[in-house]
Length: 160
Ligand code: IDP
Ligand code: MG
Image 1 (tube, rainbow, N blue to C red):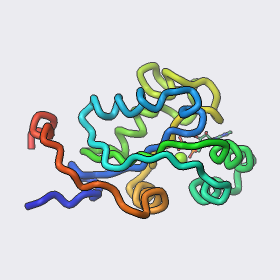
Image 2 (tube, rainbow, N blue to C red; image 1 turned 135 degrees about the horizontal axis):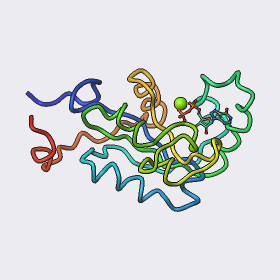
Image 3 (cartoon, helix red, strand yellow; image 1 turned 90 degrees about the horizontal axis):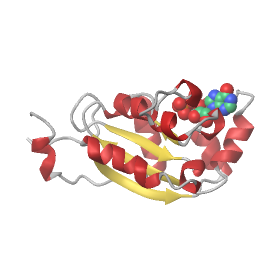
């Protein structure tokens, strides 16, 4: 049977990851993409978007009551971000682990935030934190959909 893409818990699980404006400015986009590519994950959506304030507010709506919300929205809409949809086994959780902790100072070396960032409000990257968030964020950032391509090397990445 053909794989049904985007179902959490399958080898076709999908998540939304983004390089935030600081990561774009600092030229880390390629490094971040390379980490997920080299691990074996499949890139199925990729584009640069300059978020409006409204898009930033919507993306971070669950944090709207926090005191840092205004600064976060201004920062997130201060320049283009790189939007990605990555696919593969356990990608939602693994993606978060590869990003590191929200607080860069608590992030291990080897994680993106642990390798490239210091301050909480300049922590380089975003990743969906649950299957529900992934579905919601992918619908918001990729309303046009993503690419259901089959990666021929998958037989060398997955046992089955
Ligand atoms: P996450 O990005 O690891 O999912 P969230 O709690 O969803 O973390 O917060 C979203 C973003 O808001 C964080 O990545 C960080 O840049 C910023 N942020 C979170 N907590 C604080 C805070 O206490 N002060 C300032 N900025 C914060
Ligand atoms: Mg979050």
